[in-house]
Length: 173
Image (cartoon, rainbow, N blue to C red; front, side, top):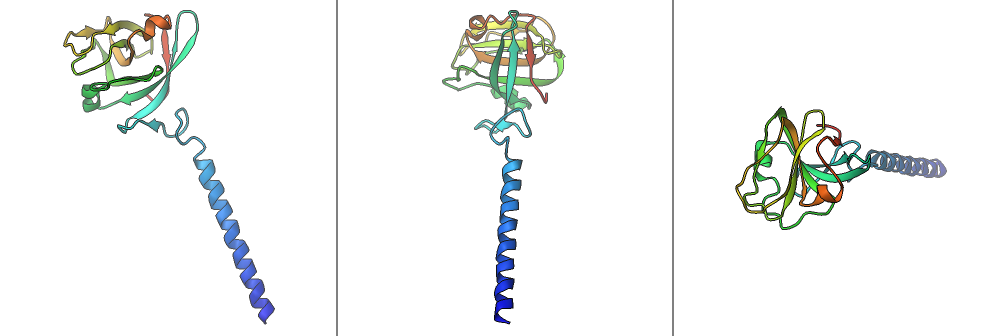
């Protein structure tokens, strides 16, 4: 009888080990894209906004990747990149609107120069306001209807030969 009890304990321990291994594998496979964008749930910025990879293909067919925070709500649109003292070289913010129309942005409370890339619903660049001056209330208007605006560091577009007619690629918006 004692050996039967011992055998039952061994079977229970083995079963528990099996369950732990299965649970660990399920957890790891579910998190294969954790912290990355492009698969499953996007990464998030410290402000809680999603972060996605935005591809920009210039007229030379060179593709550049910007890791962009995604501003979806009116309050996120209003704050944008205000009060930030720096922005990583390949970082930016993608403003997503529900419709395409002529857009106007300004630099009030924005501490760093930016390139504002105005993009149509077809993800083609309609205009760019380059090296916008920080802390100003000058309006920067899109040259045509824009559903998206991508803000990047000032000078980025010139350094990458990005211009009107170039295309953006990103998913989910």
